[in-house]
Length: 400
Ligand SMILES: *Cc1c(COP(=O)(O)O)cnc(C)c1O
Image 1 (cartoon, helix red, strand yellow):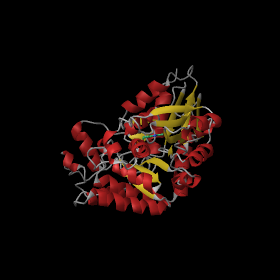
Image 2 (tube, rainbow, N blue to C red):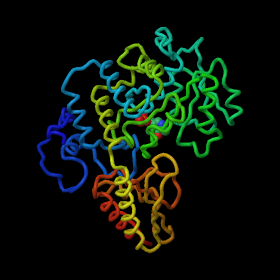
Image 3 (tube, rainbow, N blue to C red):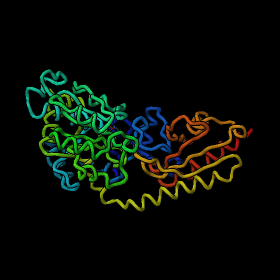
Image 4 (spheres, rainbow, N blue to C red):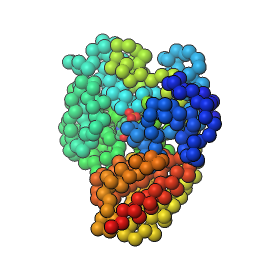
C-alpha cells in the first residue's frame, strides 16, 4: 500500500486521517484530503475511463511503483530504454515507448514517420516542406484526436474504399492511420490497411487507446502486421493517467523517441513523461498481463446484475445489461423509463446523481431519451450498491 504520506501529498495536504470518513468504500483518505483541501468533490465513477473524469484509479502496486520512482534520480533516456525493453519483451513487440498518453503516442508515431531520425527534420517539423507529409486515413476515421496527428504538419487524405486507399498512396505518403474503435463500420478493414502498407513500404499506425479489455488486443494488432500500435496508459491498463504506450518496429520507436522529451528541440517535448509515469506504466503492464481477467469480468457482471435487479422492480422502469460493441467492451447497465410516468430526462437524472451525497457520475452517453447508462468497471468494490440505491431513490421520487 501507499505510505500514509503518499506521493501526491506534496500538493499541500499532509494526511492525518485514519478513517474513510463515512464513505465506507472507495477513495483513500489521503486522496480525499488532498481534494477536500482544494474544495473539489470526488465522485463514484459510474461512467468509465473518461479523461475529463480522471479516467481510472491505479492499483496500489502502481501507486507504490510511482512512489518508489519518485525517490531517486535516473537518466531518462536510460530509463526509457530499459522500460521499453521490458514492455516489448512482455508483449512480443520489437520495441516500445512510454508516452504521456495515447494522444502523445499518435504525435510521436507521426513524427517518426515524417521526420524519422533525421536531426534536421526533427528540428524543423511541423514545417514539413520537402518531407513526406501526407497521412492516409479511411473515411469515417477522422476523430477528435486526429489533431495529435495533424500537429506534425501533415495533411490528412481520406480514402473511402480499398481502391481509393491504394490510389491515395504516393511518394508524399508518410503513414497510413487506422482508428480501431470504428473498425466495425469502416469502409476499409484493418487487414486491407496493413496490406496496403506492406505493399508500398509505408508505415501503418492503429489507435487502440480504449480497446482494453480484451487483454489480447495488446498483441493482436502487432500480429496483424501494424508497424505501430498506440494505447492509453490511464484507461483499461490502469496505469498513471498521464501515460500511454507506443509499440512497434524498432527503427520507428527509436525515431519516435528522438522526436520526444527529454530532447528539448522536438515536437514531443510538450508531452513530457516523468520517471514516475515510465515506471508506473511499466508496472501497470506487468500487472495487467497477470490479472485474472475472467474474475474481473465476473465481478463486473455481478455489479451490473445487481443494479438491473434492483431497478427492475420499479414500475415503468426498465434496466438491462449491455456491452458496447467496440471500445470499452465490458458489461454496462442501461436504464430506461416511461417519461409519462417518471418525470426525468437523462440530464435531470444525471444532475440528481451528481448533486447527491456521495456524488455519482454516470456515463456520458449519447443524448438518447429517456436513457441513462451506468459503467461499473471503474467503480471501487461495493460502490455499485450505493449507485443502485440512489437510482432507485431518484426514480421513485420522480414518479408523476
Ligand atoms: C482516450 C483516447 C485517446 C487519447 O488517449 P490519452 O491517453 O488520453 O492521450 C486517443 N484515441 C482514442 C480512440 C481514445 O479513446
